[in-house]
Length: 309
Image (cartoon, rainbow, N blue to C red; front, side, top):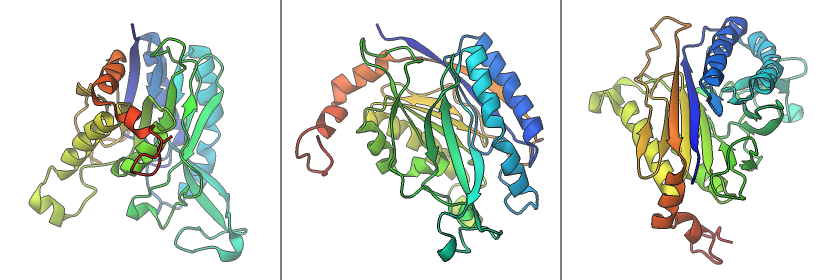
């Protein structure tokens, strides 16, 4: 009998460049999730700083926000809950200062680059089990962030989550926001055995222009909802999506989206936050694979798409 996972989705509207206030909101909701018996709590992308790269204090706020990673580790240890603390923008010396590209490397002495990072922190120990630097940058991000283009996607074991199949430790993968648009990212994780894929996001319904809204003012809702369910079905995986802009949910094959929030507008009051606890019967993953055999096909030697066993 597979376990019921309780997942706390913390959908909050981050206050721009105010890590302390945003962490206080996050901590309050993580504690509430732990009190309700959640195995995992997830926060949105840019949850400590919001996404305001033109703000003159964005870099210094990003540097400050890195210090909160240790605070999340302490919470995971003390509350015995796994945490994906959204994303945190890390500021580093440019990885190629001699050939610094002004479109992706911010000025500085030495030149710096900003990496949008997410982490998986283990319950009970506070150990960081997995990290991921966002690969697929949404086009307005590209002048400000450096993509993690060279590092392969990596699934990792999470012994602090209940086993879905007896004797098999659960594997988790991390993606961020616009990665949702790329099935290849999911395939890379599932080929390594990922059962659960967690996606912090900062995606608003207003992110496209008026020409797109002329055809369908609900196009972003349509994109997110359909892509999440499609990725769950085509990979027989649970997709945990926590988005500042709304529609946070857990998508699973057979069933679809569970616990979906409504949408949020950027004009809403900053600092609004909500916790939703979603219960997922993980038996659905086995049932889906038994019926669709997606992973079985992917693992075949000489599979026609070139990345079989």
